[in-house]
Amino acid sequence: MIAVAERKTTRRTTTTPQPTPCETCKGAGEVSRTVRVGRKHRVVGQQTGLCLTCLGSGEAPTE
Ligand SMILES: [Zn+2]
Image (cartoon, rainbow, N blue to C red; front, top):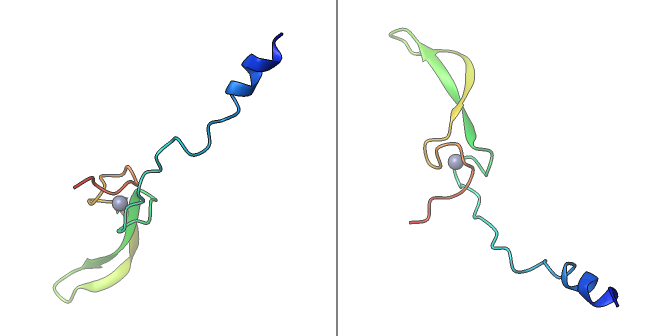
């Protein structure tokens, strides 16, 4: 009888805890920010940088 052993592996739905997505980057791990240059802070575009809230993991800090 092998059927009993096979049933055990299919019940893994609600046991795994879901990580909370970072609020700053919405779980992406990186954020886009405006790049400004010069004394007048002229906007030259946007660049994507590492999210400093979750440090790129995309998960909210557990504190
Ligand atoms: Zn983040």
